[in-house]
Amino acid sequence: MNVIVNGKPRDLPGEVTVKQLLEHFDLAGERVAVEVNGRIVDRDAFGDYVLRTGDVVEVVRFVGGG
Amino acid sequence: MVMDSMDLRQGRYSRQVLFRPIGEAGQRRLMQARAAVIGMGALGTAIAAQLVRAGVGFVRLVDRDIVEPSNLQRQSLYDERDAEVALPKAEAAAAKLRQANGDVRIDPVVTDLTWRNAEDLLADVDVILDGTDNFQVRYLINDVAVKHGIPWAYGGAVSSYGTAAFIRPGETPCLVCLFGPDPGGGHDTCDTVGVIAPVVSIIASLQVAEALKYLTGNVDALHPGLVHVDVWHNAFRSVSFGPRRPDCPCCAGRTFASLEARTDGLTVSMCGRHTIQVRPERPGVGMERIAERLRQVGEVRMNPHLLRCDLGAVRITLFRDGRALIHGTDDPVEARSIYARYIGM
Image 1 (cartoon, chains in turn cyan, purple):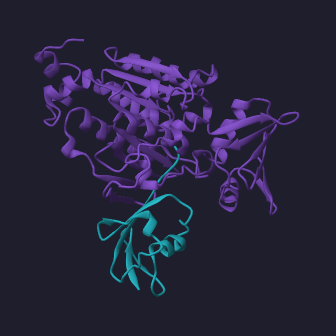
Image 2 (tube, rainbow over the protein chains, first blue to last red; image 1 turned 30 degrees about the horizontal axis):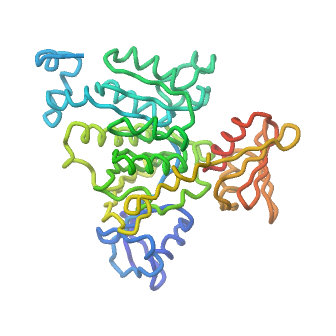
Image 3 (cartoon, chains in turn blue, cyan; image 1 turned 60 degrees about the horizontal axis):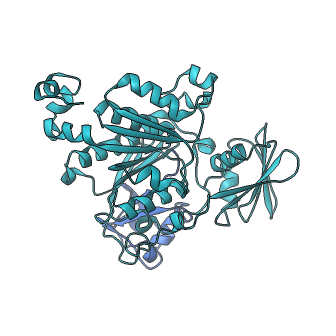
């Protein structure tokens, strides 16, 4: 399945949820905001939100340093 | 200071006044405005310099640390002399900024922002700018901002990347809406993964741009989301805020957990000779991730229960519950600072 993550095309194995996508990119324990096709995804719904081929995903991390 | 129209158009602020969205009216608003910058590290110094030069009437600078040689690579208000005499950052910055713009009232405060003083230091300003290096303080800032209806500019930068967002209580989601109620523990810090100056300047500039828009009444121009930049991997991304959460305990429920918890984040206790125990308020850390980061700065040994890292002058023993022993110091302030810098809070 092909999705665009932060501007880059990614080929993912089969059906993937937002939660699994974050795990795939080693961001599971991180504080992130996720947008799919221009709409923000509720962080409580990461595990239920199934991505479809062609989805445009933006992931932004909450960065700590200063 | 009172300025007539001619002063504004020809004087110090002439280029800023020529910029139409600000103009004379916007400049007058800036000169009446009050801002607080929390944390005077890399982000804070870049933010404060821009605010003061822009002529924001009152700027409070809050920081607990002293200037160190390792700051000079990116913290542009400090010089070698400040580091040599170990000046407090807030004072060193105030001295430099008073030379840059004598019209601005600058209020340096050398302290840690805690539940005890947060409302005293933040509730009397029009906008708060975040130059802090940890999530605990950001949740505290968010609490005060929401409680008193004060917008704040979040910014964070490490390595070559950073994120910024301008949070307006009642208008945009707050920090708790965006990232959940738990500040959590452990994250990349400038002391584990490093940081380069260019990303800091960009994030600070994004924060100041939003503050200037807000203070001059240009709220329609505000960015309605989070901006993420990675200057090394050439990424410029943004994500919309989306709606406020109707079930947000902070901005909907008006429960201010960080302010009302009345804890100081990290508790320290003496633990034998040259060893201090640091215990975080919320237990549990991602040990493997922290080990990975600490390997960048020192030798790390791990077993199922704990991790040890040798940093040369001091050693850290970190337990799974988040508790750490800092060996090689008798200074509780240093121990707390080492925990915040190398483990994150």
